[in-house]
Length: 260
Image (cartoon, rainbow, N blue to C red; front, top):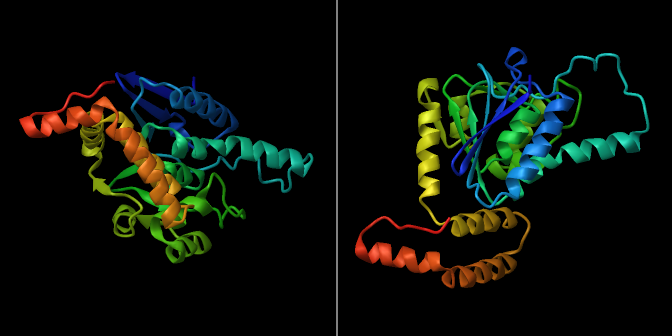
């Protein structure tokens, strides 16, 4: 049985972490499957939206700690660093891929699972979800980009509290601090994801990809540099047929029909 399932529906790909008996905790096979799936998705020009969720009652509880209780790991530390960095490219790909990524958080979300959720563009959680950074209790400093992603979503001070104290918090708290943008009953989760997908698929794909790139790059650029990038992408956008179609649709008071 695959530990990651995929389902393609038109321009949407749903990725389901599939270890429900362990709250979809991460094992090496899952990392390898995720790398393969995301590399293919990122280069697929017919794909517009990627949804990440979990099977059963959980989203992802983070790394599976079974087998790590014997203390230090064997082998050269340089090899371990390279191996860790390779699989951490999962979060990086979520961020860099032109498709819009939705984290549909259907239950407990912790550790690297929280890192992956933070790497998504949009996050929605069911109202019973519990969150935790969980790295402090595992005696590690964090992985899969949590130290870069979380402060950019909730602020450095709040991220430090969540990381250092490692306390669990609920969906309402996640909404209050801006970690998620919507909290819904479990029965409504995928319905709202469907609505978001429909909305995204009705917008110009090039414009959405440009917005994602602008937002991503804004985290490391000066204002002047960000304006340079915006001006460049804006100028190209105005020369794309989608811009003309958007203007005509507005003037004619009809939905636009953008090229795939």
